[in-house]
Image 1 (cartoon, rainbow, N blue to C red):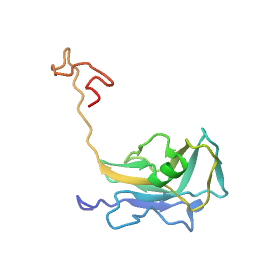
Image 2: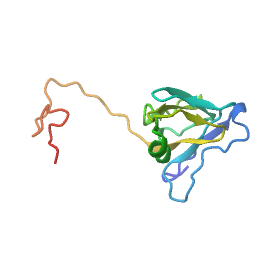
Image 3: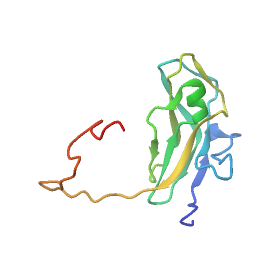
Length: 152
């Protein structure tokens, strides 16, 4: 493993046999495409969501996570997104990677075996040391919440 290209161990599960494992579609793609490992077509009705299996499990290196994100083409053309976007896969998780897809479109969306359903980013992370205090440092914004910094 190098700092630039971490090694991610991938295990294809029996129901994922014959499907491509995560792959980068182009040389400079940030996200690796994930495929649907469904045994029959799945239909997600408008306003509904479904957990779609990918047919693989993985072992991420320490201090890395996988972020599961929507595919822009599915979002634009069909209103399909990842419900908990970005979904996080922790480095100590060894189960199957699943994708929770949501249909925000107006028509049913059909998912077939092998279809590219999401993308996965492998990213480093840090764990913070949380320090309880009685007062926080002052800032110009202060406790101003949603929209408090203006529109322009």
